[in-house]
Image (cartoon, rainbow, N blue to C red; front, side, top):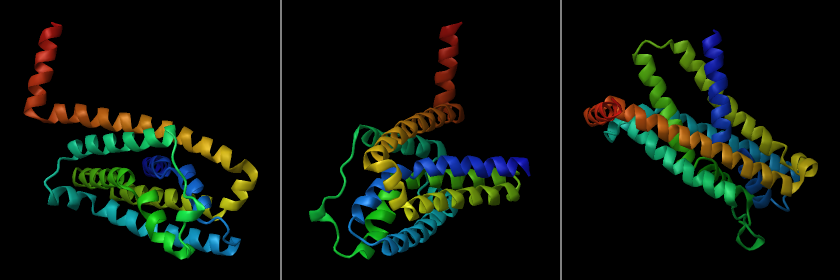
Length: 227
C-alpha cells in the first residue's frame, strides 16, 4: 500500500510540473480575457476533460506506440528529454502571450486547440507520459503489482485535476498574485523542467549504454583506460 501511494504521489508531482501549470494559467488568462467568470470556469472544466482523455490514451497506449514503431524505450526517453529541454529553455527565457488581435472570437474554440493541445498536451508533455505508461506496463510484465499501476494512474488523474483546479480559480489567482508574479512562477517551473529533462536524458543514455552491445564495449573501454 505504501509503495502504491508513493508511486501515485510521484506521478502526480512529476506530471503536474510537466503540464507547465503556471505557463498554462498565464495562457488561459490571456485567451479568456474579457470573458465572464462563469464561462471561464466552464472552459476550465471542459479543458480538464479533454486533457484527461488525451492523457489517458497516451498513458495506456504508450507501450503499443513504441512497439508499433519499433522504438526502444531508452532511446525514446533521450529524444523526449531533449524535446522537453528545448521547451523548458523557451519557458525559462520567456514566451509570448496571445494579443487581442489573434484571440479567437468564440472562447469555446480554444478548448481543444490551442489549450488542450499543444499548450497543455504538446509533444514535450505527451512523450514523457508515453514513457511512464510504457515503463509501467514493462514493470507489470516483470512482476509489478497491478495495484501499484492503478494507483500510478490515480496520480496521473490527480495531476490533471490539480491543473484543472488551477484554471477553475484562475481569476482568483490573478487577483491574489497578479500576472507578473504568475509569469515569474512560469519561468521558475521552466528551470524545474530543465532539471527533469536533464535527468531523463542522463537516465536514458546510461540505460541505453548498459543494454546495448556497443554500450558494453564503450564502458569496457572506459574501465580499461581507468585501470
